[in-house]
Length: 213
Image (cartoon, rainbow, N blue to C red; front, side):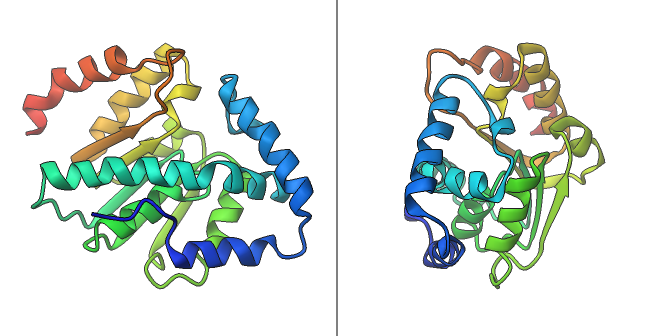
């Protein structure tokens, strides 16, 4: 089982980035970003390097733990699963990719997709000295348009991205994600009564599960 704590390499990279930044300012911005997400907002409010670091401080540990729990559950269900390629949709600072790298040593290629420049920049800086994630390719673009151009992967992960979309966009993105999935699609979302994707995604995937398996 993979630990839910951030790996030491990632912790060290974050600490190095925080040198020279005011912890008080980062904490205040973290609180504001967290409130924005609780109120149903998305990553559009993250525009600067400080915003991106504040986001990482506020949300990266919990998001990493949630994705890791899902990947651990996947490993229990599929102990033979050994993906070599990952497609991380709405990757942000790369949290899901870090978690997948820890959970599956078999992964060799990582493709990340996101439209947020500040989070993309932070992600690339955090992995710049990582041997494990040296094969990362991070494409900038809106989820659907970037996904159309992306190659299919053994493991496709979308964490904390579906909830930012309208119902119609959720259905369209779910369809496209499934098309890009060679083996397993993992969708991680916060447990909140304001967002319930079970009908949108569950029925969509169930309709096509027989063809995929």
